[in-house]
Length: 161
Image 1 (tube, rainbow, N blue to C red):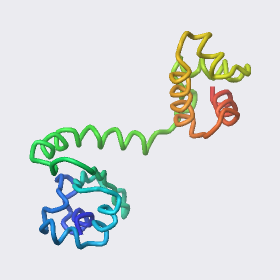
Image 2 (image 1 turned 180 degrees about the vertical axis):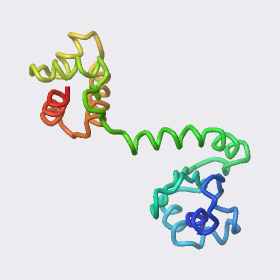
Image 3 (image 1 turned 30 degrees about the horizontal axis):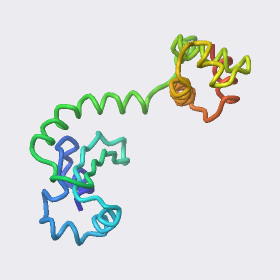
């Protein structure tokens, strides 16, 4: 199948259309395509990432409507791929260096207000931000601290610093 191409070929660089090795009719008959078609997906393209040992990684891009992915799309993804690989590697290997604050100054400021007990609305008013911006800052902070809620974020933020 299209998804197994990188393992079969050892080519973890080339951007591939779902129909590079088979006709659209043949692709449509595959179990994966049948599932995608049920979800309304009409076109697929695969951006492989470097494997991590036996773990194969890839970015699958889908289109529900419109034209199939064209060669311009392939070229654009080929140009973006090295940057996507670097961002992915950073995300996978992100570790906190001892003594280094994992939070930005803005995230640290928000966590101090959260620790005092301020609501998102109160933080927004105090910092002259929208509540949506505060929510997004907190989501990013939770991700950086690898937690899922305010209490865990406070504990992690102030035990690390």
